[in-house]
Image 1 (tube, rainbow, N blue to C red):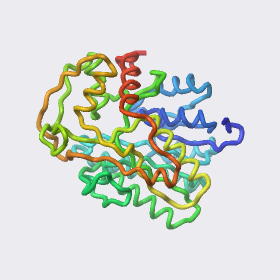
Image 2: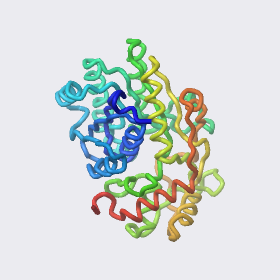
Image 3: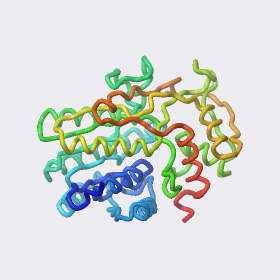
Amino acid sequence: MDRSDSAPKVLVTGGAGYIGSHAVLELLGAGYPVVVLDNLSNASPESLVRVAQLAGKPAPLVVGDIRDATLLRELLAREKVSAVLHFAGLKAVGESVEQPLAYYENNVGGTTTLLTCLAEAGVRRLVFSSSATVYGDPSEVPVPVDAPLAPSNPYGRTKVMIEEILGDLARSDPRWSIAILRYFNPVGAHPSGRIGEDPRGIPNNLMPYVSQVAVGRRAELAVFGGDYATTDGTGVRDYIHVLDLARGHVAALARVLEHAGAFTVNLGTGRGHSVLEIVRAFEAASGRSIPYRIVDRRPGDIAQCYADPRSAADLLGWEAALDLESMCVDAWRWQSRNPQGYSGT
C-alpha cells in the first residue's frame, strides 16, 4: 500500500548505514516519505542512491551530526517530520572499551541533543535502536525482554543509559510515544545484491568477515574461542536477517504512530547458531572454502546469547521469517557483486 500522499514523514538518523539503509527501503516500500540524517562516519551516500533506485522514490540525505543542534532545528523546521527512527551512533564494542568518552559523548550526548530538538519541534514519536548487549552475559537463554540489564562494555552501557532517558521522558510527558528495539545480530543483505553491509576497515562482526574471506579480501577467519560450553566450543548468537530487522522497525513505527507511552521488545529469531555453523552455512551458500583459525577468547565475550522474541509478536505482530540459508545467500550475493563494498562503484 502506498500512503505517500498522506503518510507522516519519517526522519531516519544514521539512515545511510547498514541497518538504516535497509529500513529506509522498507519505509519507502510501505509508503512513508523519508529524510535521512547521517554524518557518513561509517556509511556511504551510495547506499541511499541505490535505495532510491530500488524503491523508485527519493531517499534524500542531509549530511550532518545528531550533536549539531542548529542543524537539527533547521532540518526539523524545514522537513516537518512526524516521527523518527534513531539509528545514529557508534557501535563497535572493542572501540568503546578503548574510547569510552567518544561513545558516551556521541551516543548519549547526541541522543539527548536530538531529543531536546524533537521536543522543541513537537515531534514525540520515536523508534530507538537498542541492542542485546544491554543484557551482558545473560543468566538464561533464550533471553526474555524483562531479563536483568548488565552490559559489560561502554557501548552496551550507552544503550542502557539511552533506554533510561527514554523511559524518564515517556513518564514525564504522556505525549511521547517511544519504541525501544533490542536486536541481536543483524546479518544478510537485500536480495537484489544492491545494498548490504560495508564496514570500514577490519570488520567487527562475524558475517562481513566471513564474506570478505570468501571473496578473497582476507586470508582467513579468526574464531575467538573454541572452548565454550556450546555444541562445538564456539560462541552461539542469534543471527537475524537485516530485512526482518528492518520490517520490525516499520512495525514499531506503525505502533508508535497510534499509541502513546513507551515499550521495549526483543528482535531476534529465538534460535542460536555457533560460529562454525555460520562458517559451514556460508561455505554452502557461496561454494567457497572459508579457512579459519581458533584463537584466544576476547575479553568480555560470552558463550551464548539468543532472544526470546515473544514480546515483538505480542505487541507488533512481528516475527522473523528468513532463515540462516537466506541470510548467507543474500550476504554472499551482496559481497560477490560488490567485492570492495560501495567504494568499488
